[in-house]
Length: 88
Image (cartoon, rainbow, N blue to C red):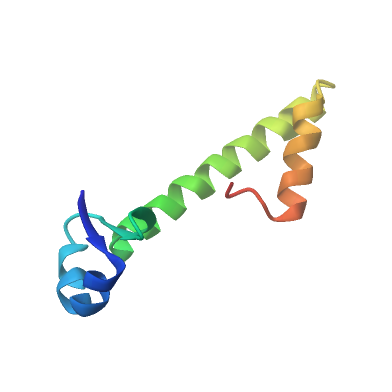
């Protein structure tokens, strides 16, 4: 993955937009990675994968409840879902 400093990313923003269409670009500030820029297609694909994983987990918890197998991690899942932290 290509790595740019935040300053270079700012200066060459237009070029970076073109580059991220084919590969992610990491942006570092003060020598530390702070962001990765990706294409909208990669972002949407990632969001779809996360959504599908969430749906699969929800379906599994539903099945566990129906079968009387409700466990603590199922409760944790719902607490995480309700708190809106399922992306973490």
